[in-house]
Amino acid sequence: MKKIIILFILLFPMLSLSQDLSNYLILSDIGAFKYRPKPTKRIYGNSGVLISAGHFYLDHDDVTYQTRYIQPEPLLGVEVQVTQHAGADSDRWLLHEVEDGYRSNDAERLGLLTKGVRVREINGNKFISLRGSGYSWTSNNVVVEISYTDMYGNKPEPLEIIQAYLHKFSSTIPPTLVLDRTHDEQWIKDEMERRLWLSDKWFVQLESDRSKLSSILKTIVDHMAVFLNYRDKYYGISAKDDGLALMGYLSAKNETGIRSKLTEYKNWWNVNKTGSINLP
Image (tube, rainbow, N blue to C red; front, side, top):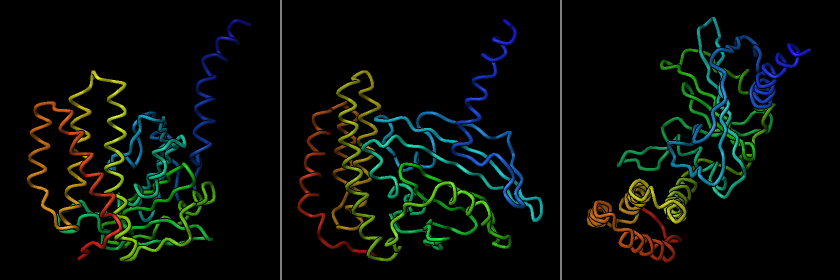
């Protein structure tokens, strides 16, 4: 009897993990694509496809579930990441941050869509697509990212996998979403506002954790620098002097100076955010 109890205790975490994974991932072959269980995993904390967007994660726990499928002929590997968010304040930006992965960080095309990105639809479900690279959508507080590599564009798209995951996680991308010039302008303005919002969120975090003053101030200044770069590009206000001032405040750990600049930018933004911008 003791052996049975011990065996159950040892197996229970594995059964729990398997059940958890199956809630988010398809743990079987999908059409011609063979399921590869070895890379299947669950990742806690600051994880998933939104990290590069500067997603604020300290007000909730992100969990990312990841796996891979292989099509033998023609050979094609497809990775799936499903990231669950907790419905915190930061989730208001989920779709915006998904788009961030399809937009340029280069100075010349700052915030503009990568060539070839478009919105597509399957059975009423919209998703963002860049053929030869990947597909993304939100399903309430879940983000689904399907990625693959087809440099020459001569392989069939992994539509079976897209359809299977759209069935599991129906898209909540608004049916009105169109990636046009008007949307580009709104996305850029939203990104500027989000960077100021992120700066505020990190200052709140600083109030509860003064031991990380240097690293948190650096994060705040980084977000403010992005705001300044967008303002420079689309409102014609040079970021150079403000950037140097912020670097000086950061070097001196001058929290008051950084807070003052943030207040200045927020006040400016409240007056100017409804104005037109100079899209190329």
